[in-house]
Every structure is written in C-alpha cells, then in structure tokens.
Length: 259
Image (cartoon, rainbow, N blue to C red; front, side, top):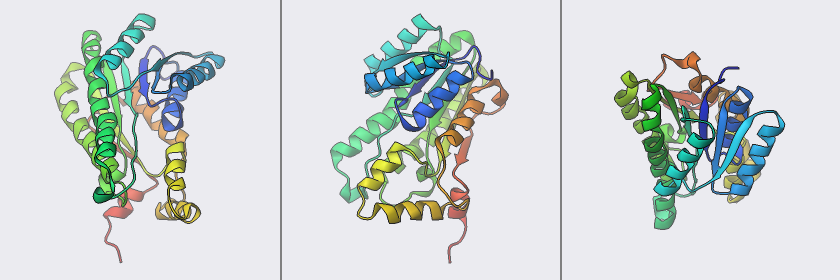
C-alpha cells in the first residue's frame, strides 16, 4: 500500500473531491481524519472507510476556527499519532464578479479557503517537525491561474494557495516537510452541480465546461484523488513547491493566443 503508516487529515472530506481523497487514502493504507462542518456526513464517510477495512475518525469542525482546528489535530494524535499528511481541501465557492459578491460571502470565502489552510498547516507542522517528515497538499484550482469569469473571490483564494505553497515549500524543504498544491480544472462534483443550479441555463453551461477542456470533458473525482495519493506518498520524495494542474489541458489552452 502506497500510504501505509501515514496519518492523514483531509478537510472538506464529507463529500465530493475531499471524500474521494479520503477514501483513496484509506484504500492505500493511511489512517484518515475526515474533517467537515457536517459531522454526520463525516461519519458516513468514516463508516464507508471502515466497511472497506480502513481506519478513520470523523471530525466535525470549522477550519476557520483556530480552537477547533487544534482540537482536531489533538484528536488525531490521540487516535493515530502525529499527522504526517495534510490535505487542505475545504472551500466555499461564491459566484459573481466583484461588484456582485457580498462582503459577507467574500469574507467567508477568505476564512475557509485561505485562513483554514493557514490554521490547519500551522497546527500540524510542529508534529511533522518532531517526526522529521510530512506532506502538506493545498487544493488550489485552475481558476487561480486563469481567472475564469464569475468567480472573483474564489479565484483570488485559489491563487493565494498557490502562493502559500511556494512560500511554505521554501521554509520547510530542509526540515522534511514537502508542500505542494493541485489545481484541478472543472470536476464532476457536488460543487459544480450547485454552481450550475444557480445559473440561468445549467445544461448549456455544463456543455460549455465540457467543450472548453481540450480533452473534451470535465474531470472525475478519482482523477484528482490519484494525484493526491502520489504527492502524499514517498514516491514524491523529491517534489515540493509544485502546482500540479489536473485540468484536461485547460490551463495550457488558456495561455495560448486566442483567435
């Protein structure tokens, strides 16, 4: 198993990509902490992991609250030992250009997507330093590279995570902690479904999402989870400071001159 002996925390893991990552980590032998606001939904994921002979615990917390974050890391230490893998996946995605985004929505996006990643990282790094190893993986997005329309606040936070990745990788490279990020394109997930439901013509927009990816379709959750498994594993021992685009070629297309 590629993650045997790893102790992993995955935020935003009650559904969607986060759930997919948590499930794959457990399949590969990691002991997993499933973090989300919805504790009952976390427990459902834990039950699925245990039914497949994996090990996991449910942690219903808000990643933007420092005290709750500290509690989750301590629970993991008591249950499984020091956290050696952290996936900062928790996110909210308000839609709209800047003038269409409420201050409240902007601040919540900042609190979950960026503050949450900062607090979770800050909480696990001392334990990683003690054991001399660790892998932190931030969930960025192709929106942080291209700035797709109608996602101003979300795009800003995802670009911020890419910058945080570079800074952290420099700080901890010689201390045994690798820090990377993954930037998916459009993924067939609950977040996409909710975004489409808010639009005037969701069917047409979904087709546009398929068409804009050079590979001809949106991605699948397992295609993203596979990259996280690699970055969490010892196979990626020489990989830090990287931003892996898992976007069916969208970011490359976006960098080319348009007719």
